[in-house]
Image (cartoon, rainbow, N blue to C red):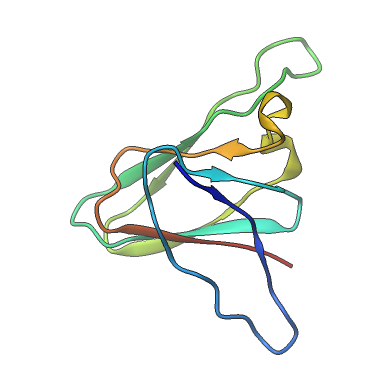
Length: 109
């Protein structure tokens, strides 16, 4: 289990840290300017699940976000502030369907 803070993209460019996906990954400081780039190096699609805390304006539980990343591709995923769980210091928990050959970068503007 590890917590990751977003790396700031600079005008001159930024070389983001590539992280290996693992059970228990969490993102800190989500904002409307943060994003996750997931690289799927496996031979099959994987899913990333984010449980969004809270409720809608109608009192219903917010829907869980399930994102599919096709095999041998990369996908950019926004990580808005509303994904942060107030009961867990505002962190966003990532649940991977598989972690072998999956890497990610967490950045913000």
